[in-house]
Amino acid sequence: MPQRKPFLGAVTAVALTAAAIPAAAADVERGRQAAQTCIACHQADGAGNAALGYPRLDLFAEDYIIQQLQHFKAGHRQNPLMQPFARNLNEQQMADIAAYYGAQQAAVPTPPATDAALLAQGEKLVHQGDWDRHIPACTSCHGPDNRGVGASFPALAGQHASYIESQLQAWRNGTRSHDPLNLMLAVAGRMTDSDIKAAAAYLAAQPAK
Amino acid sequence: MYSRILMTTAFSLIMAHSAQAADKVPVKLPDFEPEQYVHTAPTLADLDADESIHPELRKVIKRGYDLFMNTQQLRGENVFNDMSCRNCHLGEGRQHWSAPIWPAATTLPDYRDKNWQVNSLEERIAGCFSYSMNGKPPAYGSDNMLALVAYHQWLARGAPVYEKNIAGRGFGKVADPAQTPDYQRGKKVFQENCAICHGADGQGQRVNGVVQFPPLWGDGAYNWGAGMARVDTAAAFIKHNMPLGQPGKLSDQEAWDVAYYINAQERPQDPRFEKSAAYTREKYLNFHRRTLYGTEVNGRVLGEHNNTGAKPFLKPEALRSRTFD
Image (cartoon, rainbow over all chains, first blue to last red; front, side, top):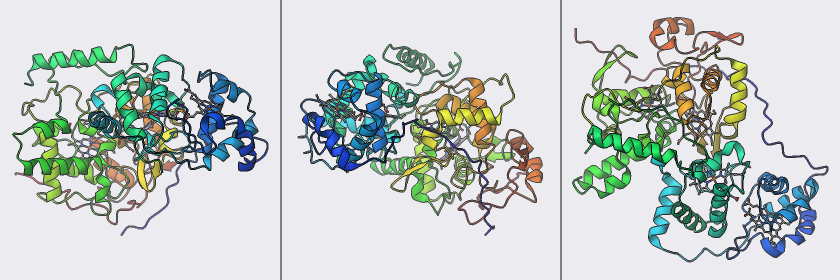
């Protein structure tokens, strides 16, 4: 067996997303306090509200939550309900709240099985994509079980179908933007209403953790 | 069913689709030449629907599909890096400009310049195992080889045998760059467009131990004998397939620069290695004139090492030469 020698790979120091660094380390307890204004819609455990389309927040990496709050603040995500709350947060509060919700595990019942054909259509799109229309499998970015990859690719499994649908539509109608490299804009732009319904129904029915 | 006229129609449908207003990020791929054969490879759904296929055969084709999509199941046996076939042959090996695999089933046996001899389909597959997968091919005629061959051949369903003017074969070509490809410019393209998935260090990302984004260099990547190590081949793959979901996003210059940057990094030894990288480069210059192997980049000669990655040998026995003299 030939002797192994380590590779002298070039050292590439990369600043990925320039998430602003808060003054003090994020604190779950301070986050709980700061989240008192959020729980009316997102609940204390981050379960959100399926009927009203308020997203679950317990699924995400902390940096993803911070990034999204900054997007609301900057107007890259437009939503009249959510934007005022994001605008009121400073960077320290964002980090604390992200730590708080990141530490939750919400009890969200699996939605009742809908139309089997719709779920099958969704499963195919999520796991195989539709390459004739240049749609890669959702799993190729969101992870093998769609439970997210790092801070850039959010979890989708167990998220409310109503919210998944609203976000895919938001990319299509321009009210959500600035996703890294337009990665999600590209995919959402190629999806039909029927794709969106099917993928959302399937993803919402998958176990979150 | 796969007549040229029908195919032309299918082609314009694809074009019409990418022109839809809903497509926010346009897909920019080269046009097919009018006289080319355009194939629409069948999908798994077609396989399930086709009652003329014997259930035993269906099982074998599906096994081939499964091996192609998750080749890591052969890790340590036939595969010694982090790759699966699908990583370079996107869309289940069906996709135009992503080196669709079925043409190998309709054009082989044929002479290949890579090894100066006539190769069968099994040997073509063995080639990707030996170089791209830094591995040891499943034995010729083995169950796994049969399954892979069956998958390739079934994807070719309806295609004319020995027709070589095939639309969307290989990765296409990227026009010669205006400026000589450059390491520093390539590094910038990489950091801005690729690092989010492949990692700032090019080592890819795993989720619970499973490869999520494959590495581009280092022990887990394709070796120095792999087609992707050729800068022009990588430029074409990248231009027409990366970033994932955005074919045609990069300019020609960016594609060349980033392909140069990736292929100026170290990777496991070329299995054909003899004496030194410079010697091996010279011996296989037909191939290596398109790689940086055995040349000096940033003050070191690439490939001048005896690292075979996780593979406990240099050259698999399957790579053998033959002559009919």
